[in-house]
Image (cartoon, rainbow, N blue to C red; front, top):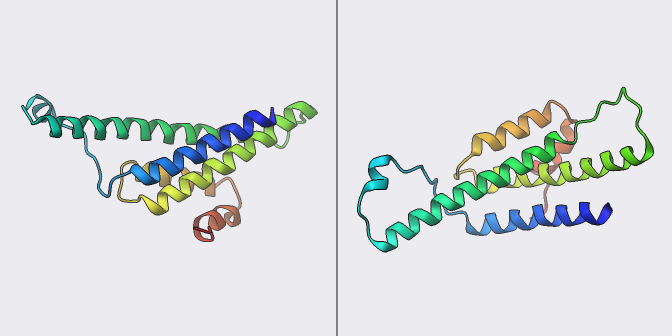
Length: 143
């Protein structure tokens, strides 16, 4: 189980590094139907395809981070078996990594798409976790 969690953490962090490197310095908007039907050069068509693909994959990554965050919510009033408790701790570790990635993206690619989604995740987490943990991730990261 711990190998699975470690691999998932590394995958999440690796994707973060890739997105930080390839996200352009501008927001990518969806093409209108008119723009999609226009005849454009092969280079423009390739660029459009790449940009639209990037947005879809980035959105999928953000959704997976949100799933990790939501999957870590634990009802402390319940009692858990040791194996389930181990799983919950691992889920919590994944949620911490997901939160770190979301905060990094909110800081470093604020100009890009889905910034509202990033802030929504952070604000929702602030209402569930102590302020210290999120603030530490947001403001005291080593770069």
